[in-house]
Length: 395
Ligand SMILES: Cc1cc2nc3c(=O)[nH]c(=O)nc-3n(C[C@H](O)[C@H](O)[C@H](O)COP(=O)(O)OP(=O)(O)OC[C@H]3O[C@@H](n4cnc5c(N)ncnc54)[C@H](O)[C@@H]3O)c2cc1C
Image (tube, rainbow, N blue to C red):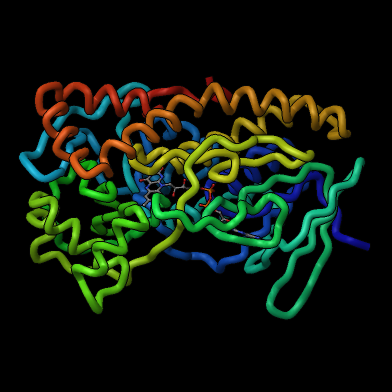
């Protein structure tokens, strides 16, 4: 007989683990499937805004987050071609400020918390097929040597949006000049002030820098595919990441200044193209959380928050129904879809506008001129991007 669960969650990024922990806390039997072995590095700036501090506590990783994360980020800045512009970061609840924790650390902590709550973890196993049924659905999972079938009434796609795959919930491949590719590296020894998180704007892309755990300076950025091709012509024999990095150092003197003498801590990681936009949080009887439901351009550094919060909100909506028959799933799906839009749609739209301006040929200069005149717009942008918006199922 196939292994039976109440819910099966595909993907153990922050969205999948938050859902798993939320459902397991209700006493549901949960399977979570993750194709990579942890700890694994991930393209991500690794900043989590202050409004998530209480949620991390509820998820059981609050103490470790506080112990390990980098310093509180109290100021935001714009690093572009000219002078630096700075503004205060708006605090979350009380006086809490956001901090950065490496995804190799955070994702492992969350998956351990899901396991501690009773979730069954299949890792490293890849989900390769979902077959929907009226009462229960089945998922095929594969390891390098075995294949298994799991069954559950609730199916949750939490597998992110950047990797191609065989699942019906995977996005179709794209290859367009204006797609953005993501890169990330850690450095030791940079000279960024501990409480400052600069937004970096350069022709063809944007990025960010922040101090994370273990004195690691996290640098991450997105670059348009066509701009990357031009950068590679200017840096022949370099990797895509190195070519973009050289392009940023040449375009943003402040970045070059902060990283002078810093040493790479581990290799660059790359991903993409990223898939910003609003998709569907519930479709064909499959719930979607995190990036696969919808994704903001990382210029606002809100993807981890959206992943954690969407998982938590979904678990709260499902928790309103004792039995998950098809009607209960449809009702929970509708309520979740509307809560999702209410919580995330504005920031996704704002991030799309900001990224379009930042990456345009004159965008960095325009942003610098505008923010230089109105530095408060940096703080306002941080607030509009959701950094102070409470998590509904916690209030
Ligand atoms: C350059 C850059 C910088 C960023 N900076 C920040 C930042 O500072 N702060 C922030 O909040 N966000 C940031 N983000 C966004 C953030 O990284 C994502 O939004 C976040 O990782 C989404 O989480 P998720 O759980 O939805 O998906 P993911 O984190 O992508 O997790 C999905 C998981 O599913 C697994 N998986 C995939 N397919 C399968 C399968 N078939 N079977 C089993 N497992 C599977 C994957 O291995 C993965 O572990 C950044 C993004 C980029 C590109």
